[in-house]
Amino acid sequence: MTAIHEPLHETRALCPECLAVLPASLYADSQNKVWMTRTCPEHGEIQTMVWPDAEHFQHFRSLTFPKVAPAVVTENGNPCPTGCGICQRHQRKPTLVEVEVTQRCNLRCPVCFMSAESDNSDVPIEELRGFFEAVARTAGIETGLQITGGEPTVRSDLGDIIRMGRDMGFWGIEVNTNGVVISRDLEYLQQLVASGLTGIYLQFDGVTAEPYLQIRGADLLETKLQAVENCRAAGVQVVLAMTIVSGINSDQIGAVIEYALDNSDVVAGVALQPAFTSGRFDTKRIVPLTMGDVIFMLEGQTDGLLKADDFWPLGCSNPLCSSGTFMVEAAALKASGSNTPGVQRFIPVTRDLNRDEYMDLYNPDSPQGSVFLDILAQKGIATARGLSVIIMNYMDAYTMDLERLEECSMFVTMADGRLIPFCSYQLTDCIGKRVYPPWGCKPEELSWGDAAMQREQTKETGDVR
Image 1 (spheres, one colour):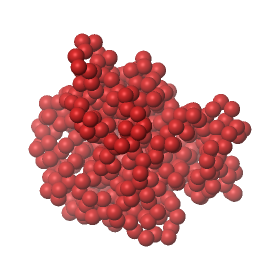
Image 2: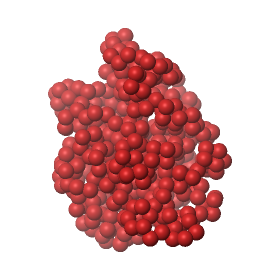
Image 3: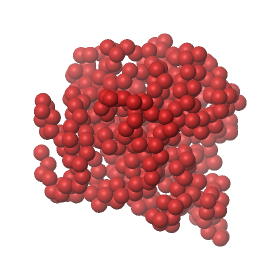
Image 4: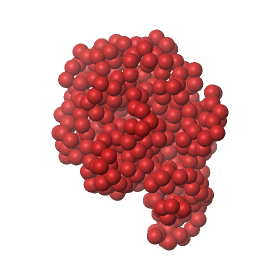
């Protein structure tokens, strides 16, 4: 076990074997890395590396924004993470809510946090109205909606679902998709836009074929590029969602940023998501990555275009859960235009933002990807073309910090009307058994896939989002 060098703070964590809630300590080791340790009476001591640099970790922890509590909570005596929905202990309101409309998928990715399959598990549209009503009642219609699955574009009535949400008053509705259907059928995408679609959240794992072969099970690069082109033609913005798996595509983060900047007329943002362990993982065990790892990787892979100090917590959740910056064309920040070609035309606006200014101008009602865009608007800076870069630090049974969980602002709808924090909803133990069933799944069916395979892959289950 790693020797404790410097204690940092105390929290509550889980045993990944049995999901027991345990007191936990975070500390810096002799190499300045941050670890979380706890001891399960049945399974012994567990140590998890949670950040690559203790000073950077403490800096992020210090950037805590005022907490806006949920407007509607439910009394629940069960402890975290089994008593969610939104419980009275929760400290922050939802800013994004996922609505799962199907468990079907047109791919069988080796890595999938949903472990989606080709079955008939579609939520009936009349039940989806109840989901939307629950979101409106609990979180409000100003909350962003993300339609997800499975693969939502396998539904022939997806346009009707989007229109229903817009008719109920939701202003922002995006679809989380692998891009297969929208890359092949521009007319279908145009119909979704006409129904009220406001954005595409596109799985985009790299700029070469190799990451897709290993993560998605097929060479999907041209599919992804065509999906972006079709979004441009349909006039709908796209966010590239890059799942980062160490040793598979962790060397392509900078290249994805460069591609996004080159296409920033249609690409509004990049969401960088280190893989976390949940669902199906049919490849070898990966080395876990944290948000801190990705921040420092960006500095090296963008030749200093992005620096570690450019990233700030987004403010809507615990500061260790999400961070970001906004890159704007230099011409928007300077009196004279810039003729520098390529990505060097863009500057992270956070580089000229101090702590007090960020705290004063921060708007708690800003969607996650628009925090810095809204600050620029308050400062009178034009941002006709720019790129939001955010990093999501999702938690699993190994990294679950219940203090962080109580500040989650990203939720998933349940069939009974509850809203469950995303990391609670996706939580599985080390053999893939889920705490919360998705729609259409009975409690006794909480473990995805073949039980024997799950046992063989103990501690090798994983998510890619």
